[in-house]
Image (cartoon, rainbow, N blue to C red; front, side):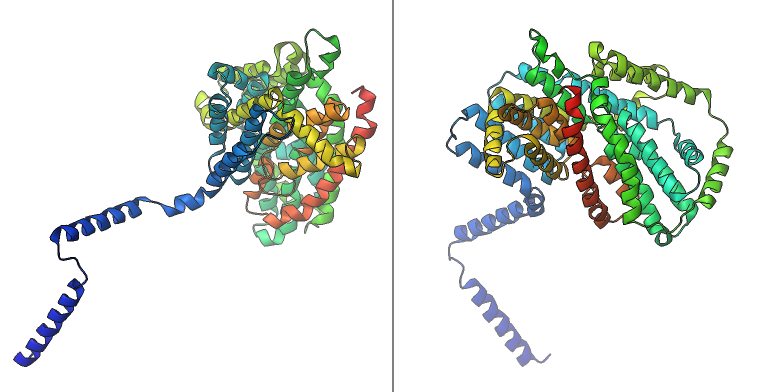
Length: 522
């Protein structure tokens, strides 16, 4: 470059440099302070994860909602403690639905809130967490892991086919029936996990192309999930919601000194007498609705059954250890039926889990990793909060308000009240687990029964049974989530068939509540 050109370039650079420095303060200390402040700002900005706040937005919304509720003036008839409990319930419900934090976190906050906000003794709160219902839930989850560990899925599929034959409609009914009978005793999530390989085996043995078995897959997989769902109401061990309601009846209405209140001690057999008939009636209806909604591509599964038979023959006959596992579970079932009134269902469930461990059929490591201990804590905290809703009068206040709201439309008693509670429970249970739904609504609807002069037992059964109508969403029940995880179903499939199942189940349950339960003296 020529010398003249270099001089011009240097002059331009000097001009730019001077112009950039022109706005800076002349003091070197000011320059250092500004630079240091800007560096600190950059460090702070790098440490703030804006995505975290967006991801947890519903947590902060729930906390803000709770703070606002606590500043509101007390409504007539509601104590300060009652407002605190209602606030905790509302915050917990928002967190249940949106899940911005792991659900066991909500349980921890409920425990802490009872001590800090209500001023309860921590030992008293701890005692309220561990009831027989919670022991029963914990023991049932442990038994579920032990049963799945035995890996009897293909034999079970072959057993179903031998009973039903190879016709698709009969196999679907057989899957629903077997799934239902098992789920009524050991919980729907366990049976769904155990039966899913059965359904997938029949699907894949029919065709390797998912597009060619789209409707067949829907019918088989929904037969599993809906079979489990309608059966979960059949016995106390069919779902945590049943044990929770049994615990509420005892906590709210039972008085050892009053013989008339002994009817509120609902044992295993008593529950079966009330709820099992509805499960049996629903079984053929489930198959009919599924076949009407999804017309299978294959009317007969002879080819798949032949392949299944070959695979079962390769495994050989059942081993003695398999029969021993079945025997242990049969003994536990007998204990629930004949001994739950004296020993408690939770004690028997824990005894069964111990028997599987002692026999070496399952390892503690399997139970420790297979049981969702957070679920146990969640139900314990929810039940504990429900008890506080009763003790503080919050449940009574909400129940009276609910009845007053229904009065103008004539739904404050009788059939109208049953239908209103059923619709409310169905709506709630499709947004959160059925156990959580019953834990939240139980104290309210039972108090509503007292206010309306209705039977708390009928209202309790209406609530517990309606909590099984979570047919509309993937997250409604564990069984729905499990079959959806197979990859054969779409979220819209649940809406397509779910509304039909919900309407049918609600109508059937209301007829049973009106015609059958009163015959049992409730």
